[in-house]
Amino acid sequence: MRSQIPGQVMILYSWVAVSGSNRTASGPPVAMGITDDRARAIKAGEETLGSGRAAMVIIEVVRPGMAAHTLAPCYVRTGVGWLGRRTPAGEVAWDRFFV
Image 1 (tube, rainbow, N blue to C red):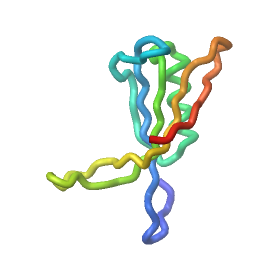
Image 2: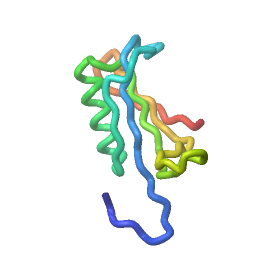
Image 3: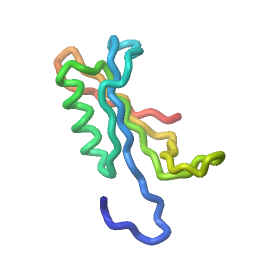
């Protein structure tokens, strides 16, 4: 991970690739990961889509957090993400979304 400036919020990228049809992607996750580099998350997602194992990849910006009831470490969604799907031409199109 990159060096952190004291007091700076650490930003990470959580990604999950899901199977199913390109419209519903209702199947189980086929791959997932977390990284501090958005380009790495995109590359991993594109490789999984390219292999044919996944219909869709979701990348979300997260930050480290703590669960309220258990005080267990977790990742907290920031509300920004990208949805990746294969185009008919075989490329991957990424659409940014806000939650």
